[in-house]
Length: 138
Image (cartoon, rainbow, N blue to C red; front, side, top):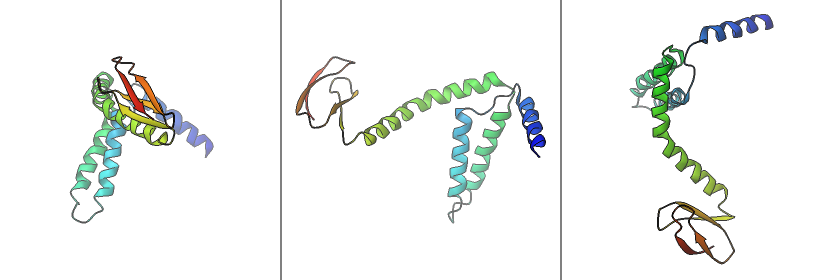
């Protein structure tokens, strides 16, 4: 059995040679497809299963595509669009993790999120981006 699985692995790797493979956009499409499948279980939302099938099919076809340059352009465009929401969620996760030790606030000049340690009294904070000085209570 072990020999069979090793041969299968090598054959699959050889078959995938020159193909796009899984990238960020394919992962996103798979995730949306799975979420839609789970949502289609709810009565009255049966149509979502067809949309889920389309999302999953597009993700698989992208992964097996040999037109790597076109798929890479699509993925770069997706990454550019997804960059801002990813940063927003990462900041929210960081704020939640450090909520007991750090206080976060926005700079009045440029809107950058700044942080100060909690419990240190009133601090003078200088924004590293726009050099605006602010007095903030921690």
